Image (cartoon, rainbow, N blue to C red; front, side, top):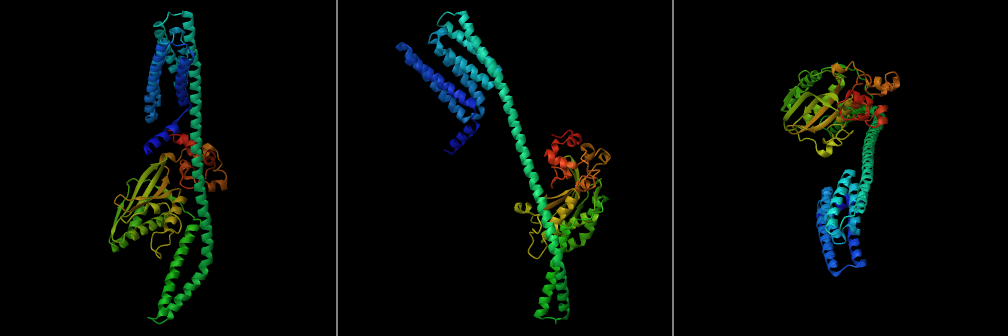
Length: 502
């Protein structure tokens, strides 16, 4: 029952006006046959013959409509099968109702008009030609041909097929154009919705950063006083007393709060970068040297896999080191029972943009699908309360966005989690080619404040779509991209990526 209901819903969803036309044609044919029997002075033996013809009509209609119900996706082929039975039906009507003088010849007009409308003028002309041959054969079996009347009747078949078929082609093209425009509109609305979501997320994080900075500044001074007095009390109180233990707890918790405040200020303040070309493999080796001893203490195997011939990137080394420190620290904390920590570099190309990728992979428990969606949100943490501030990954995300890149999490090849830092770079052969602002003339290169707002200026004008446009993972900064709604449609994108679909 559920299958039949689902099939019915599928047929109803794909039903067209032409399907109604084919069905109405059957009703007209059957009604005309019955009406002719009721009105015309027909002999009894002719009535019997016409009842058998009507039975043949009902039988093949039932058969073909059953087939159509279960295979509605093949309806164009099934209607052609229907046409063969219709030819036989009209042929029998004409043979048994007067030949060339039969009024049932109008059935050929209906068949020609309907098929010309559904399949186009070529199929309409073929149907008209077949109707002419069938009419000639049926008429010659009963009566002598009258050339003038015969030619007049069949000429109308072709006069019907050609204009209706041409009109059908025009309507079909217009309908396809409308459907294409509807698809483009739907895609544009989805893109706009996506861009609005990214803009709201960016504004939300910006507001949260401002609020956090203000709160942190207000809390920091009294917290420093509390911590100072707690340390003085801890030194003066006698050992092995409850008061001494209480003072130690206060000192420990104040220190934890100070770390949270420091991370909050790091997350909320605008960083002052000192950008220069750097080798990411050097940063990888620096991280290896810093954490090698800690990994040995925790019985972890530290593996480093630098990619040979890695291109340099424009980065602030201290900021990238901080991001790596946070990721490595999280990976070490995740492997409580030992495991393997892998640091690697590689290159990747995505959306016409080249990236140097730094991977930090562990063999810990991994990241659940629910956590992936919010793992980079501020103050979200999977660690137990008291360990970590919930801002480490948020700071990594902020650092990468300020470097025009991104951070992503995935399942590590050997189990666990892998965090990847994507840092964009421009190949050497692209550096001195025309930049986006030179082609689009948006004014970013001559307007100071505007240039500061555009992440593509001055180093990423050849990959503006990924750092400032609709293909970026943050909000759209480029006014041209905001206007057109999709960087694939941008003139500059077409110039730089002529082989990519636009």
